[in-house]
Image (cartoon, rainbow, N blue to C red; front, side, top):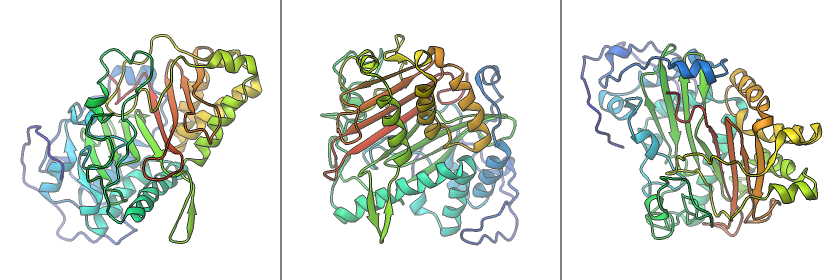
Length: 403
């Protein structure tokens, strides 16, 4: 169980005498926030959310699922899963490394009862679209596949959690050693744990239809920081990754991130030879530039070619790329956010480094707008001989929520 140091105010717990929850069919149970053993402050909706948010969030549905999950927990479990909204643990408790290389926040799903685990997944099912939820399930299956290869042997994500680009990293960015790069705590092995049970759920701020709170869910190759502020939502930052690209587990074939791969390569390969030359980003990247442990600042000088200068057909390819990330969110909010990002194409750039093909383990593609930020990074396999992919989505106007 992950621990945190925020002050805890204990109050009597008042729950229904009988909580009957069937596996896979978890329904809504009334949950009184004031009855939680760990009382966290309700955040007001910041004015900046109204300025930069796109609206359309299914906040009430997510709060309903969160309350139903919280109602299944003991006092001690509530203490572990609820954090103050601005707790610094939010920024350090997610990674592309498995545990225990980087400890996660909240409750480990593998430690929950079947009913609690089902309720936890209902939170993510509410927060994500059908596409996004299926992707999450498949990423977890990929971790089960990695676990099956070694049967518990020490295997780690040997790729750096921070960039080792040949150019200067962002001001204030941690060194490789600080975030698990070469010489750091994650440089391969270290008793890493793979498997779908090694995923965690936590809440930063009290889930509320009228306040601001974050749903943080993550493990080895998936990390979601989904923040709600009234009718606005942001999924910044969200990490999705996979190794290998395709695999068979229990006689079923999986290909997590297939849509992101195809759309990203399609967008960059739609550029002409001259545009490709102009779009090449200075330096090389063996991982994400603004990944786990490196929250910026975002580059002040964008690199690549201006999306607004491309043909309508090329812009449609970029939109298809954007859609594969944005559409992981619940459908109505995703549509509004996508429209916002497309409207900013006159200030949005697409660039690449290392390669532009899916089978090149040096391929790196970036989309950089005034709001949307996407990175797609190929690298050599850490646990297999196949391509290992990391991706990240951020919104520069609402990273970890609004201020």
